[in-house]
Image (cartoon, rainbow, N blue to C red):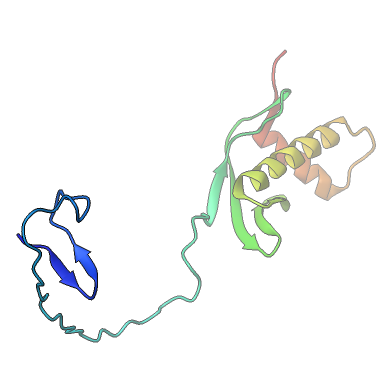
Length: 146
């Protein structure tokens, strides 16, 4: 196989690192002309929103609180906003936000734990709505045995 010399550039044989290592006469080889036979393909963009790795719904089951634990997972809605990611529990209208999906879930867990502890310790009479929220939270959260 010969070396190709085209407009001052040398193309080497496989396994040869430099022109000095190349043995034999250097021949000018004209490479075959390449043609482009492009076929037009119609492409339809069905959705203007790029695909997202963010799920529409998620089961939340990781309450990181030393005194509390979840009895069952909580179904959360997720959405992307200009501020980041939001997770939302529709049943009690509670949410968490963050720059990432993980931080939004962590914020939700902290908010949920604080709400549960506050409503559980509240000695003053609660409104009917807060009583409903406290009962719903009691269905999902329990105090860890000491």
